[in-house]
Length: 123
Image 1 (cartoon, rainbow, N blue to C red):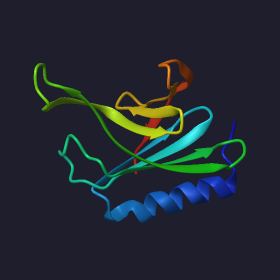
Image 2 (image 1 turned 90 degrees about the vertical axis):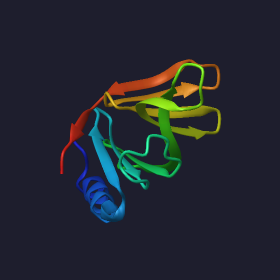
Image 3 (image 1 turned 30 degrees about the vertical axis):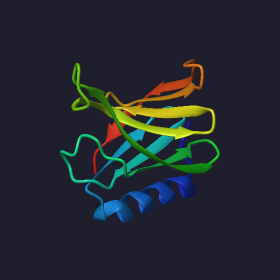
């Protein structure tokens, strides 16, 4: 599958426009390109200001979501101990983008309804 020219231009424009963010992550999976823009300072392990833009490679269809860091809390406390990735809740499901570059969609019952392993693109 190849990403359409217009969809690729949209992703690149979004990615370049994110330069004012603290940092961003771009992941390419077999079906989509995912851009995650973190609007907190790098090192902030519990950021609540994260944006995701997803572009389907076959159709060029996009969707944008807002989310948070996905962290593991230290045992017996509310302090984050490990950054796992990013999570984007929406009606009836949650989209996860892991630090291992896995994209997954989990429904409200905890069932994985879509998953892909991607590859991080470096600027």
